[in-house]
Image (cartoon, rainbow, N blue to C red; front, top):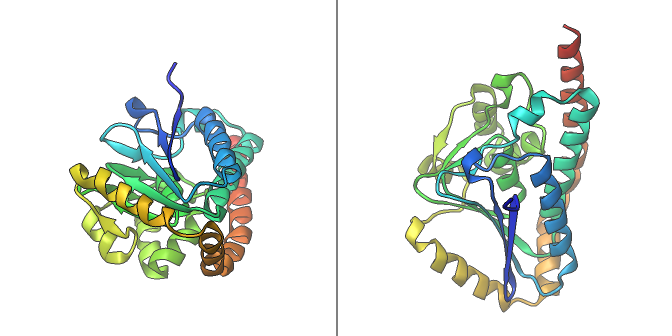
Length: 242
């Protein structure tokens, strides 16, 4: 069986590919565990300057948590699921190397939250973004509430989270959700050039500068993430009793 996360290192760049294309790269327990190991590898690899996260195929970056697995969880397992994702995404956010999500197709729910954990986001013209969780009965749980508001502002974040509407790449660029929109056939050259630029930066300078920019935001996110897990677990427990 194909691994759910593919890992490819070239010089100072590590590319992680979410590899469930037939399921729109939705995130199950197995993928979470593979992501956990891949991020541990990134943390331990001093030569890295650039982490790229993308989805296999041309239909989706990721459509978020696997709802089939999610629906079978009890409240305790739900809290464990949420905290596992939060831990991984926070570690991505805290890496000394620069991270970039490459969104081609759907980035919905937990897939969008994974992209938000990265330093930068690049989209192709076919990209689409949405936070549908509240429509299913629970809030975003992998840090999305805090990271989205921090990135695009309170008003735009509330619009996406509470109304659950999807937006295209151009709208995502306009509101600051993504940094660039790049044609699919130019992505390879774009990422190679970015990797070359980062390879020339002293790793200590890169790590210090990232930390200095992000330090205050990380501390704010930690408390909110703990609350997300508790709220969602409580909602699941309430559902099981009704």
